[in-house]
Image (cartoon, rainbow, N blue to C red; front, side, top):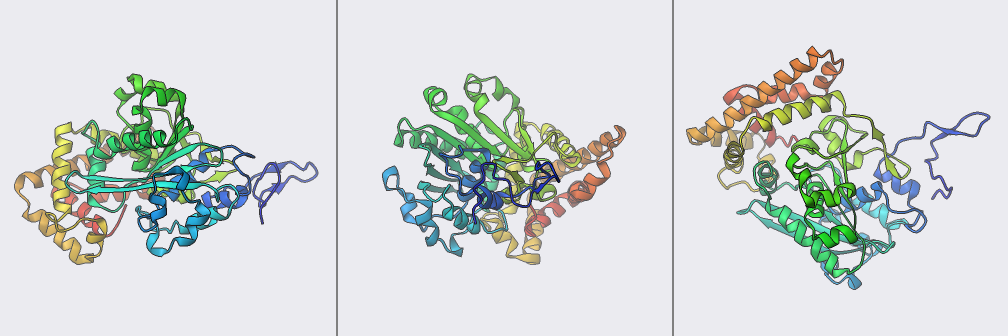
Length: 433
């Protein structure tokens, strides 16, 4: 049953006795958003930040088998209602989440709000040699606008290495490709207003594309760009003319305790939002808290989030760009078992044997690689300890809670020297995020 009241609060919200005033509304998830507000068309209620997340979640679906979505002719693009019945389990999301995203797609396809949304220009590009992983999907919305979505990191080691490469390269292949893709889509849909979005690495790509689009597109057609818990950019980016042209159109959302979105600096403004999950699992977009047409916005990051921010910024800041590159190359040479493994699934499928293979690979690496990996993880351990000590010195009540939520696990996983490297590599084979 669809709710048709103008306010569209969830029915679980209660009414204050004798006054009829609504209070304590229930927070939902993106799935609840579709149930509560899916009957409202874009004409009745305009595009909002939750719509952005729904489309970004849909972009994780593996559309490689659905050739109709590959078309670059907007007029031939199928609707979500036409595509959804074609999807099977083999087409489920390609990201790192353990959840199925198919139920959200199926539910969205039944709503008046999303069923007539058209999908086209699905693109999947992978280049192990370049450490490039790029996936994109475009949507034609019933309100006459175009939404370009970039998928986040998948399970490929090349995709993960590309994420690490962001810490020392001025631009990675996926970022350059994102700019070209967004510009191409704008050309295919001339005069159509444009929005861009993505989750995780896809959020970084969305912001990057918006910043580097031609000035005419930025000023006259770009409506907004959404970075949903994706890495940010260096502070000097904020001083460029390209950034300044779109600064008021960029929207960055980071859950209160997530660490993924702060792996690179977020010098730009960002909104802290609530999630039904804890700790690093708040990166899961299906867990983000929603009320009405908005996320549940919070005033600041949690104590764990603040501690994580400090640790990561100190750790990354302790390395020169050259050291970051050396560490990345050495780490991924070990993780790939010198080319024998291509995905995290390859490592996980080996179980204990996979962990043993990683340790053997590390032990057999040349002394320079082992020294680099050992030293960088040692710095992480030092930064964790110093940040906890600093926070305790300031009398933060949340230190103990933050450690219980997972920061203590990071400290143990990091350790000192060689032992830290071994523990970290072993945890990856268990599929920890």
